[in-house]
Image 1 (cartoon, rainbow, N blue to C red):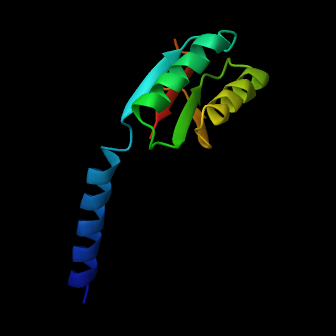
Image 2: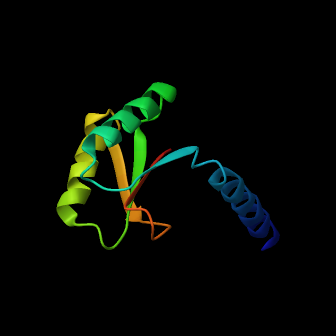
Length: 101
């Protein structure tokens, strides 16, 4: 009775592990929000390299001001990345980390 359920779970887990490895295909680091021109240029280059991507994740450190985070999100949307997600930064030395999906 449990064997089909266990088989289904094993296949599902294997699929999620395999699919999760390919969710992050590129990234760029931007040190501060005050450098808007380099961020805009970097986003334009990223969009030029991967025009099919519409999602981006902004990783913000806890020390980043909310207004700066909103400005970065606006820059991402203005650079034709309409699906913007926000998460905690993976490293402390980065002010922002933008990754395309």
